[in-house]
Structures are given as structure tokens and as C-alpha cells.
Length: 122
Image (cartoon, rainbow, N blue to C red; front, side, top):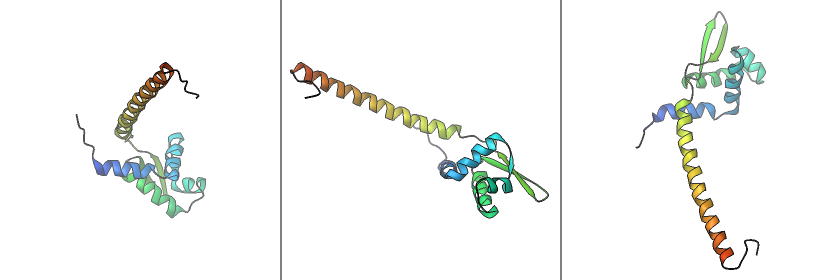
């Protein structure tokens, strides 16, 4: 059965997690909420640069922000990456199956060589 995924959503999600800084932000927010200022300091970035990273994470639904006064606090968003993980898992299983089949072919060739009086080390 062919399943279709919302391309725009996947593109946004994968773009958001493609950057090491954004992955680091997600890890940091997994431990505790943080202001954009705190994140910028932790990652040695300008406030503007960090705000751009946080905006991409927000667009993907991975982070939410709340502004209280002059402080914008970030926390993990309500959306996880379950669909993306499931998509990746299907491809992992497909490749694992292909490699298992390749291992069988290699084993058959080794047995054939051995039955012909040769060893694999010759």
C-alpha cells in the first residue's frame, strides 16, 4: 500500500532538524525551557541569529514561544516527529532486508567456492 505524506510538512520538519544548532536547541529545550537570550548565549550567537533558528523550529511545530514583557521564552512544541520517524523506519527496514538478501547471496557463493575445493581466503 502506498502512503502519501504531506510534502510541505516533511520538508519543513527535515529542514528544521538539518542544522546542528537547531538540533542543539531542541536538545536544550528537552531539558528546560529557555529564553532566546539564554539560547543565544549558550550557542554563542547573536539574538537575531538565534531568533531565525527558533522561527524555523516554530514553523515546523517543534518549538513554541511565549512573550512576557521583553522576554520570549521557548519550549518544545506539541508536535513530535512520529510521522517522520515512521517514514525513516520504513526505509531502514527496506535497506536492512536488502542487505540480509545480499548476505545470503555472499554466503551461497562462499559455500559454492568451498564445495569446489577452494576456500574464501585463497
